[in-house]
Amino acid sequence: MSDWTPSQHELDRRRLRRRLRTRSALIATVMTVLVFVAAALVVTGSPGWPSVQELFFNWDDAREALPDIWDAIWLNIKMFLIAEAVILPFAMLIALARVSRSPWLAPLRATAVVYTDVVRGIPTILLVYLLAFGVPALRLQGVTNSAYVWATVALIISYSAYVAEVFRSGIESVHPSQWASAQALGLTRGQTLRHVVVPQGVRRVVPPLLNDFVSLQKDTALASAAAVFEAVFVARDYGNYNFNYTPLVVVSCFFIVMTVPLARLCDWLTARMRRRELAGAL
Image (cartoon, rainbow, N blue to C red):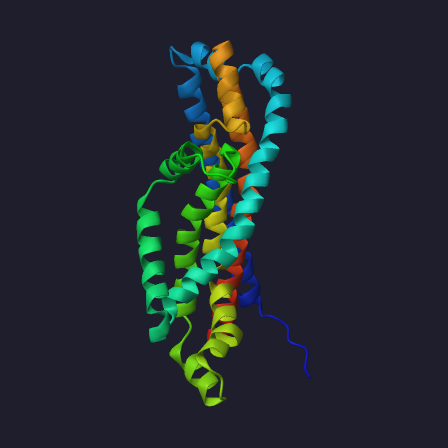
């Protein structure tokens, strides 16, 4: 095997590409800094900025409310983890019901269609109100009246409909040749779904699934509408008593810290899948 040495022309092209990349990165950085600096000057130079700063960006109030918010944010995290663990299998069952073709499963398929259509049409906060306040009002024996439990159930019901459609889109995106090949090997439709189609479909929808769970993480704050003592409720309660809403900004920072890593993971997985598809095409 002979050693290959790039020509002078190739070296010049590489240097030109490096200069162009450096120039583009420098321009993008300078423009970004200028835009943010200009926005900061406009906001801080406005007549009402001192009042806004005192009301939403008061360091003393942030420090005073931080311990209670820190304790309460774990309730949001617990709610998110419980809901996610239930949503994934429940949504997969709904998706499988929707893609079923057996005439015996027609009632189940119709129920799954109605469920996804109706639930996706109801705002999540209304589900929180209906369950957290409506179920305890029924006074059912042996059924908990915990607003925390029913707010979590509302999130599960709402997001399972969305995630089920994500799963269904992944399953239906698998090429029909996969079905034909599996059936040629003697697999039943159920075995084909379990061993061939579902694994491929789930891999394809991981990025949109993560996007749904980013939204779920934020929507745990809707439990505050049912008087659940999670982070947003604690911050709002502090504001009502002290007439300062800095704790709401603190809670926003907590949610940003929780959701940004998931968002970046989603971007990384999307780019990775795109690279794999390009490599497979070549």
